[in-house]
Length: 534
Image 1 (tube, rainbow, N blue to C red):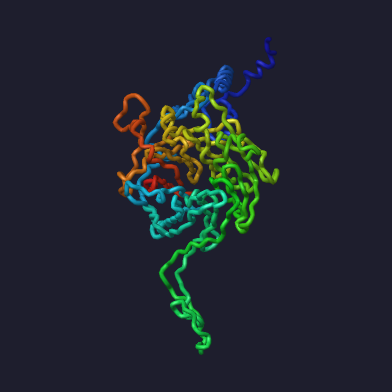
Image 2 (cartoon, rainbow, N blue to C red):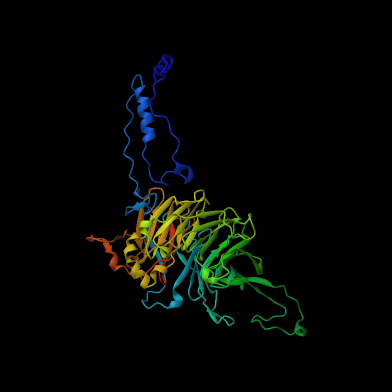
């Protein structure tokens, strides 16, 4: 078909274009928060449009300035649409953070007592306090020193602030079950006055603790001696006004509430709501909603227990409230699915609002597929737009607006896929690794074996493997990136996958909410690292 002459004249009379017109942003920048959230796609449409425009340019535009080539993304899509990871050592963050050793807490003994094994790590909302719980039921709180916090070249160290016994071993006589004192989770409440509050839980009982300071003591009682003995009222001839005298600082931990007798199965998660009045607790089959002021009753909001326990196919592995929406929460399952629920829809959230699940690649199906797909931890980003899940081999970032697949997938220790049989025999395949965000949601961190921990930069797609070891325990010592050789000839700085120590594992990590300070728990030691400051 020949175009009309008027249309051709109009095309020739158009002004010259110096650059191609801007095209709409790609799909993943609209749904996943910016570039880098998805694999680059071929620009066939843009190239065709530019070619069509060049045919009508009169006269030709001046040459555009040359730009350096765009760096290649370390995550490239494979034929099956999955991401293949390329190790890029030496990059610890968006600005190539250099991590250095700061402190290590705990004994050096090789013979570790079971009660001393750290079971949870958590910073408070300001990052000034760091709490750890162990299998012996103890909670140890570290406080960042004040005098160095104002200096730009140094940060204050964390020293012991308070230690108390949170839980004791118990025995359920009705079910003939021993209840361990192990601390499963610790969650801080936002500070509202001079005191600090935290929730700690073992398998059955949740406790609200108040941590307060006292640096004055009253003196001059009328009916009490200085040593605490009461006086005979008939001997009191004069009245005295009690006064407060300065004393050495004493930190007291006192239980304010005890929430018990609400869970039949072991508690695996607690999460404080954004209204700061309620919180949830989750066990293998149920999730309960509590009010912080009411201890004798809770509301069951999720119950996946079947009428016949032989029909049980999955269990709840983790649960968390949304950081901004007080009616929204998610919980993960052993089948690798994440369900988002809205309490405004119904009182019992058996029907989820969204189901996040990635289809399984049939070519990777094996005997261990269901085990390694079980989600061990789920965390919302601080912004509330994304959530991160951790399964045995990978970390996945999900956009709450896209349910069919994660927007980012990071392989933590893919080299262990060939070792799943031996990991199954020594029960390591059932280890529950946690994960955490940094303060700006740009970097995620999780643990691995051989005391390795991994960081993934979401903007640059770089990753790094670091080791928590006493060999580099000098302050300000920069950590060297580690590499694992899966097969073939091993290089000088690489570690063979066969030489990894699976008894040394990092299950619990925490990131300071405002600074580049991380806490990593090995067996019975707590390592604190920070970025190198100029």
